[in-house]
Length: 384
Image (tube, rainbow, N blue to C red):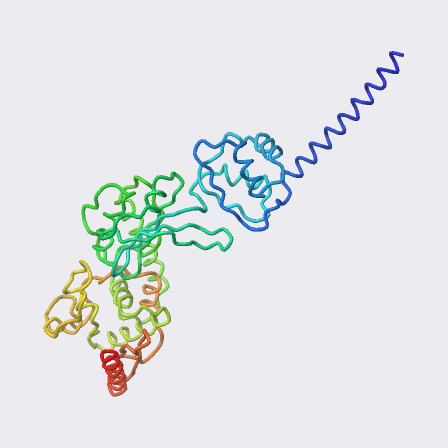
């Protein structure tokens, strides 16, 4: 009798072990197999969250099929205690294993809300925006001018959230003074910039910043980036340029940047100035005259006077015979590359054409015709 009982018990134990092994294998497979998400989502993990709470949130969002397996898998992989607060973009079809890795890896949030401090040529703006996971595009929630407007509630709310990301976006063509002035109003940064950096030395781009970061460190990142861009462009420059060194290329790039906002025109504008320099002609470009008036400290806000066009300043290219002594703004990568690799043309003139672009010409006769057309457009607009 006892032998029979022992035999049955042994059989039951063997079956139980096989069943348990099957459950474990099934659980392991569920943990690493493709998940049920049919579109990506943004998962916000608040400070102090637990893996149990996150698993419930993931279940409610339809990102995982079994919260228990998710928790056991995170514990088995020694990641249960490594949960990181933030907003994490969970791609469609992510497995439990992949999700665990995403929410325990750390680093900057990959979705959610961000505040962008935009430094523009004519104005600066603070924008609150949020990533829409369905379209993978940011949606604006609020925007205001920090120099003139009160802070909207949407901005005050996200500033209190620990997972909000911050970014400083610098437009092409802004001056170093404008950058320093605008950074002083970026409320997440600290410290003062003791001296305005040399004109042209800061790379226009988008820079992620953190709360409490020193303003000088942001400036230094911009400077290092511009150094690398300029060095690479100069290394790959075309032959026969009327430029002696990278700094002259930077000066020319800043003029190109201020002369056109049409990306496709940069190479043509660069060719005009290159041809003029090669022929010993004056550049005769208004943005350099404006810089001689403002020194880069703000926007002129009006047309140039005849007296200013005739004034002898180091930057007035209607008076001086070559490049001005310094850049007149901070040019972007595309303008720097255009300066050292201009289009191959015979153009030596250009004027606005009424569409936002320019009409280019090889001869003075052709240029005068383009100027006459532009004046007709100006007169018509003035009468409307």
